[in-house]
Length: 44
Image 1: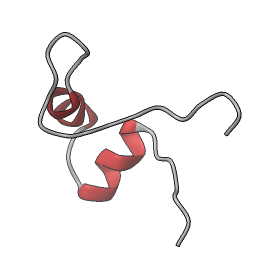
Image 2: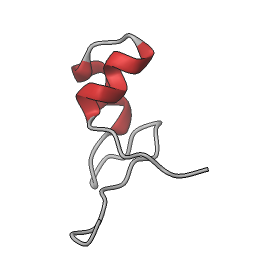
Image 3: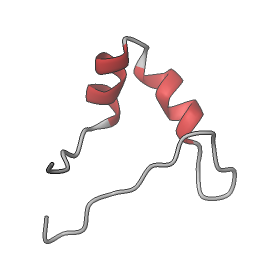
């Protein structure tokens, strides 16, 4: 099974929530949220 990278907006559309809701759950480096998220490297 391969991994597919989604943008925050694509992921929000997939689970039918607004993208700002996704951003709140992902959080920031200083204040991590409830969802684990990562960014693909430049080589991907």
